Length: 278
Image 1 (spheres, rainbow, N blue to C red):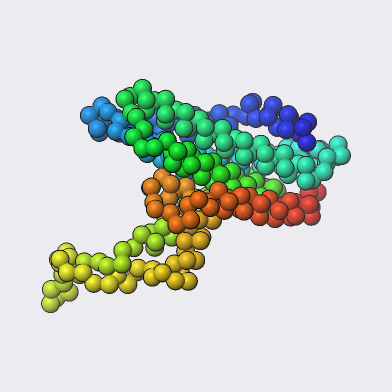
Image 2 (cartoon, one colour; image 1 turned 90 degrees about the vertical axis):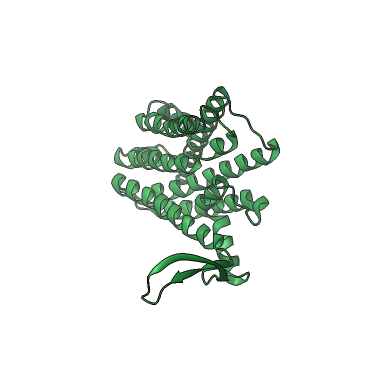
Protein backbone atom coordinates (compact mmCIF):
# COMPACT_ATOMS: atom_id res chain seq x y z
CA UNK A 1 0.00 0.00 0.00
CA UNK A 2 2.81 2.40 0.89
CA UNK A 3 4.52 1.83 -2.47
CA UNK A 4 1.21 2.37 -4.27
CA UNK A 5 0.62 5.65 -2.49
CA UNK A 6 4.15 6.83 -3.25
CA UNK A 7 3.65 5.99 -6.91
CA UNK A 8 0.25 7.70 -6.96
CA UNK A 9 1.51 10.92 -5.41
CA UNK A 10 4.64 10.91 -7.55
CA UNK A 11 2.39 10.68 -10.59
CA UNK A 12 -0.01 13.25 -9.12
CA UNK A 13 2.49 16.13 -9.09
CA UNK A 14 3.20 15.46 -12.78
CA UNK A 15 -0.47 15.25 -13.80
CA UNK A 16 -1.60 18.28 -15.84
CA UNK A 17 -5.27 17.85 -14.92
CA UNK A 18 -4.39 18.24 -11.23
CA UNK A 19 -2.75 21.63 -11.80
CA UNK A 20 -5.29 22.87 -14.35
CA UNK A 21 -8.17 22.09 -11.95
CA UNK A 22 -6.22 23.75 -9.13
CA UNK A 23 -5.71 26.97 -11.11
CA UNK A 24 -9.33 27.15 -12.28
CA UNK A 25 -10.66 26.36 -8.81
CA UNK A 26 -8.58 29.14 -7.24
CA UNK A 27 -9.67 31.58 -9.94
CA UNK A 28 -13.32 31.41 -8.85
CA UNK A 29 -12.85 32.66 -5.26
CA UNK A 30 -10.36 35.31 -6.41
CA UNK A 31 -12.84 36.71 -8.94
CA UNK A 32 -15.70 36.53 -6.43
CA UNK A 33 -13.70 38.34 -3.77
CA UNK A 34 -12.59 41.16 -6.08
CA UNK A 35 -16.19 41.49 -7.24
CA UNK A 36 -17.35 41.83 -3.62
CA UNK A 37 -14.48 44.22 -2.91
CA UNK A 38 -15.58 46.44 -5.80
CA UNK A 39 -19.32 46.29 -4.98
CA UNK A 40 -18.72 47.28 -1.35
CA UNK A 41 -16.64 50.37 -2.17
CA UNK A 42 -13.28 48.58 -1.91
CA UNK A 43 -13.98 46.81 1.39
CA UNK A 44 -14.62 43.21 2.42
CA UNK A 45 -17.38 43.19 5.02
CA UNK A 46 -17.10 39.66 6.43
CA UNK A 47 -14.74 36.93 5.29
CA UNK A 48 -16.91 34.10 6.65
CA UNK A 49 -18.99 33.93 3.47
CA UNK A 50 -15.92 34.21 1.26
CA UNK A 51 -14.12 31.40 3.08
CA UNK A 52 -17.00 28.94 2.74
CA UNK A 53 -18.80 29.99 -0.42
CA UNK A 54 -16.77 27.97 -2.94
CA UNK A 55 -17.10 24.44 -1.56
CA UNK A 56 -19.34 23.39 -4.44
CA UNK A 57 -16.68 24.44 -6.95
CA UNK A 58 -14.12 22.36 -5.06
CA UNK A 59 -16.40 19.32 -5.39
CA UNK A 60 -16.92 19.98 -9.09
CA UNK A 61 -13.20 20.19 -9.88
CA UNK A 62 -12.56 17.16 -7.68
CA UNK A 63 -15.05 15.28 -9.86
CA UNK A 64 -13.26 16.30 -13.05
CA UNK A 65 -9.83 15.39 -11.68
CA UNK A 66 -11.00 12.02 -10.32
CA UNK A 67 -12.61 11.05 -13.61
CA UNK A 68 -9.50 11.91 -15.64
CA UNK A 69 -7.08 10.39 -13.13
CA UNK A 70 -8.84 7.06 -12.65
CA UNK A 71 -9.85 6.87 -16.29
CA UNK A 72 -6.19 7.09 -17.29
CA UNK A 73 -5.45 4.01 -15.16
CA UNK A 74 -7.89 1.93 -17.17
CA UNK A 75 -6.91 3.42 -20.52
CA UNK A 76 -3.21 2.85 -19.97
CA UNK A 77 -3.63 -0.61 -18.47
CA UNK A 78 -2.04 0.45 -15.17
CA UNK A 79 -4.57 -1.45 -13.07
CA UNK A 80 -3.87 -4.74 -14.85
CA UNK A 81 -0.14 -4.16 -14.50
CA UNK A 82 -0.50 -3.62 -10.75
CA UNK A 83 -2.45 -6.87 -10.42
CA UNK A 84 0.20 -8.76 -12.41
CA UNK A 85 2.73 -7.53 -9.84
CA UNK A 86 0.71 -9.25 -7.11
CA UNK A 87 -1.09 -6.20 -5.70
CA UNK A 88 -4.61 -7.00 -4.47
CA UNK A 89 -7.68 -5.25 -5.80
CA UNK A 90 -8.52 -3.93 -2.34
CA UNK A 91 -5.09 -2.28 -2.09
CA UNK A 92 -5.54 -0.71 -5.52
CA UNK A 93 -8.97 0.60 -4.59
CA UNK A 94 -7.94 2.05 -1.22
CA UNK A 95 -4.78 3.64 -2.61
CA UNK A 96 -6.85 5.42 -5.25
CA UNK A 97 -9.46 6.44 -2.67
CA UNK A 98 -6.78 7.93 -0.42
CA UNK A 99 -5.16 9.75 -3.36
CA UNK A 100 -8.43 11.20 -4.65
CA UNK A 101 -9.55 12.21 -1.14
CA UNK A 102 -6.18 13.86 -0.51
CA UNK A 103 -6.55 15.87 -3.71
CA UNK A 104 -10.01 17.01 -2.61
CA UNK A 105 -8.61 18.16 0.73
CA UNK A 106 -5.67 19.88 -1.02
CA UNK A 107 -8.12 21.76 -3.25
CA UNK A 108 -10.26 22.71 -0.27
CA UNK A 109 -7.26 23.88 1.77
CA UNK A 110 -5.95 25.90 -1.19
CA UNK A 111 -9.34 27.56 -1.66
CA UNK A 112 -9.63 28.50 2.02
CA UNK A 113 -6.03 29.75 2.14
CA UNK A 114 -6.51 31.96 -0.92
CA UNK A 115 -9.83 33.31 0.37
CA UNK A 116 -8.49 34.03 3.82
CA UNK A 117 -5.20 35.53 2.67
CA UNK A 118 -6.66 37.69 -0.08
CA UNK A 119 -9.67 38.71 1.99
CA UNK A 120 -7.43 39.77 4.89
CA UNK A 121 -5.22 41.73 2.49
CA UNK A 122 -8.30 43.53 1.15
CA UNK A 123 -9.39 44.55 4.65
CA UNK A 124 -11.74 41.69 5.45
CA UNK A 125 -12.23 40.37 8.95
CA UNK A 126 -14.04 37.46 10.60
CA UNK A 127 -16.78 39.04 12.68
CA UNK A 128 -18.35 35.91 14.19
CA UNK A 129 -16.97 33.56 16.89
CA UNK A 130 -14.20 31.38 15.52
CA UNK A 131 -15.41 28.00 16.84
CA UNK A 132 -18.62 27.87 14.73
CA UNK A 133 -16.57 28.74 11.66
CA UNK A 134 -14.11 25.94 12.39
CA UNK A 135 -16.98 23.48 12.77
CA UNK A 136 -18.45 24.62 9.44
CA UNK A 137 -15.04 24.04 7.84
CA UNK A 138 -14.96 20.55 9.41
CA UNK A 139 -18.39 19.80 7.93
CA UNK A 140 -17.18 20.94 4.51
CA UNK A 141 -14.03 18.82 4.74
CA UNK A 142 -16.03 15.72 5.70
CA UNK A 143 -18.57 16.37 2.91
CA UNK A 144 -15.75 16.80 0.38
CA UNK A 145 -14.18 13.51 1.46
CA UNK A 146 -17.54 11.72 1.23
CA UNK A 147 -18.09 13.11 -2.27
CA UNK A 148 -14.62 11.98 -3.32
CA UNK A 149 -15.51 8.47 -2.14
CA UNK A 150 -18.55 8.56 -4.42
CA UNK A 151 -16.38 9.68 -7.35
CA UNK A 152 -13.87 6.92 -6.59
CA UNK A 153 -16.61 4.29 -6.51
CA UNK A 154 -17.85 5.42 -9.92
CA UNK A 155 -14.32 5.62 -11.36
CA UNK A 156 -13.38 2.14 -10.20
CA UNK A 157 -16.59 0.49 -11.38
CA UNK A 158 -16.44 1.76 -14.98
CA UNK A 159 -13.63 0.81 -17.38
CA UNK A 160 -14.09 3.46 -20.09
CA UNK A 161 -12.43 6.83 -19.46
CA UNK A 162 -15.09 8.76 -21.38
CA UNK A 163 -17.87 6.99 -19.48
CA UNK A 164 -16.16 7.69 -16.16
CA UNK A 165 -15.98 11.40 -17.00
CA UNK A 166 -19.64 11.49 -18.08
CA UNK A 167 -20.90 9.50 -15.09
CA UNK A 168 -18.88 11.47 -12.53
CA UNK A 169 -19.85 14.91 -13.81
CA UNK A 170 -23.48 13.82 -14.24
CA UNK A 171 -23.52 12.59 -10.63
CA UNK A 172 -22.18 15.94 -9.45
CA UNK A 173 -24.74 17.90 -11.48
CA UNK A 174 -27.71 15.72 -10.47
CA UNK A 175 -26.85 15.71 -6.77
CA UNK A 176 -26.22 19.47 -6.78
CA UNK A 177 -29.48 20.42 -8.48
CA UNK A 178 -31.33 17.78 -6.48
CA UNK A 179 -29.94 19.34 -3.32
CA UNK A 180 -31.13 22.78 -4.44
CA UNK A 181 -34.62 21.35 -4.91
CA UNK A 182 -34.70 19.60 -1.54
CA UNK A 183 -33.38 22.65 0.33
CA UNK A 184 -35.98 24.77 -1.48
CA UNK A 185 -38.72 22.43 -0.21
CA UNK A 186 -37.52 22.90 3.37
CA UNK A 187 -37.33 26.68 2.90
CA UNK A 188 -40.99 27.05 1.89
CA UNK A 189 -42.75 29.29 4.48
CA UNK A 190 -45.82 28.07 6.32
CA UNK A 191 -47.81 31.14 5.18
CA UNK A 192 -47.68 33.11 1.94
CA UNK A 193 -49.22 36.37 0.76
CA UNK A 194 -52.44 35.95 -1.20
CA UNK A 195 -52.07 36.65 -4.94
CA UNK A 196 -54.17 39.49 -6.36
CA UNK A 197 -55.98 38.25 -9.47
CA UNK A 198 -58.64 40.21 -11.34
CA UNK A 199 -61.82 38.85 -12.90
CA UNK A 200 -59.95 38.08 -16.12
CA UNK A 201 -57.38 35.91 -14.40
CA UNK A 202 -54.55 38.45 -14.64
CA UNK A 203 -51.99 38.47 -11.84
CA UNK A 204 -51.37 41.84 -10.12
CA UNK A 205 -48.89 40.96 -7.39
CA UNK A 206 -49.76 40.01 -3.84
CA UNK A 207 -52.02 41.42 -1.15
CA UNK A 208 -51.18 42.06 2.49
CA UNK A 209 -53.31 39.11 3.55
CA UNK A 210 -51.74 35.72 4.12
CA UNK A 211 -52.94 32.20 3.46
CA UNK A 212 -51.57 28.69 4.10
CA UNK A 213 -48.79 27.77 1.69
CA UNK A 214 -49.66 24.47 -0.03
CA UNK A 215 -45.96 23.81 -0.71
CA UNK A 216 -45.02 24.01 2.97
CA UNK A 217 -43.81 20.69 4.38
CA UNK A 218 -45.52 20.20 7.71
CA UNK A 219 -43.53 18.56 10.52
CA UNK A 220 -43.92 14.84 10.04
CA UNK A 221 -42.69 11.90 8.02
CA UNK A 222 -42.24 13.72 4.69
CA UNK A 223 -40.38 16.69 6.15
CA UNK A 224 -38.27 14.36 8.27
CA UNK A 225 -37.36 12.32 5.19
CA UNK A 226 -36.36 15.39 3.14
CA UNK A 227 -34.32 16.72 6.08
CA UNK A 228 -32.54 13.37 6.43
CA UNK A 229 -31.67 13.27 2.72
CA UNK A 230 -30.31 16.83 2.91
CA UNK A 231 -28.17 15.86 5.89
CA UNK A 232 -26.83 12.75 4.13
CA UNK A 233 -26.08 14.17 0.67
CA UNK A 234 -22.61 15.81 0.70
CA UNK A 235 -23.68 18.39 -1.89
CA UNK A 236 -26.71 19.35 0.22
CA UNK A 237 -24.51 19.72 3.29
CA UNK A 238 -22.18 21.96 1.33
CA UNK A 239 -24.96 24.17 -0.03
CA UNK A 240 -26.56 24.56 3.39
CA UNK A 241 -23.24 25.67 4.88
CA UNK A 242 -22.65 28.10 2.00
CA UNK A 243 -26.12 29.63 2.42
CA UNK A 244 -25.90 29.69 6.25
CA UNK A 245 -29.02 27.59 6.76
CA UNK A 246 -30.33 26.73 10.18
CA UNK A 247 -29.57 23.02 9.80
CA UNK A 248 -31.51 20.47 11.81
CA UNK A 249 -29.08 17.99 13.38
CA UNK A 250 -26.04 19.98 12.28
CA UNK A 251 -23.77 18.36 14.89
CA UNK A 252 -24.30 14.97 13.24
CA UNK A 253 -23.34 16.01 9.69
CA UNK A 254 -19.72 14.76 9.97
CA UNK A 255 -21.11 11.36 11.05
CA UNK A 256 -23.44 11.38 8.03
CA UNK A 257 -20.45 11.99 5.75
CA UNK A 258 -18.57 9.17 7.48
CA UNK A 259 -21.56 6.91 6.78
CA UNK A 260 -21.54 7.86 3.09
CA UNK A 261 -17.79 7.22 2.96
CA UNK A 262 -18.16 3.79 4.55
CA UNK A 263 -21.15 2.74 2.41
CA UNK A 264 -19.72 3.83 -0.94
CA UNK A 265 -16.31 2.35 -0.16
CA UNK A 266 -17.83 -1.00 0.83
CA UNK A 267 -19.96 -1.06 -2.32
CA UNK A 268 -17.07 0.03 -4.54
CA UNK A 269 -14.65 -2.56 -3.18
CA UNK A 270 -17.26 -5.33 -3.47
CA UNK A 271 -17.97 -4.52 -7.13
CA UNK A 272 -14.32 -3.92 -8.06
CA UNK A 273 -13.29 -7.31 -6.65
CA UNK A 274 -15.67 -9.03 -9.08
CA UNK A 275 -15.01 -6.75 -12.03
CA UNK A 276 -13.70 -8.31 -15.23
CA UNK A 277 -10.56 -6.36 -16.17
CA UNK A 278 -9.76 -8.26 -19.37
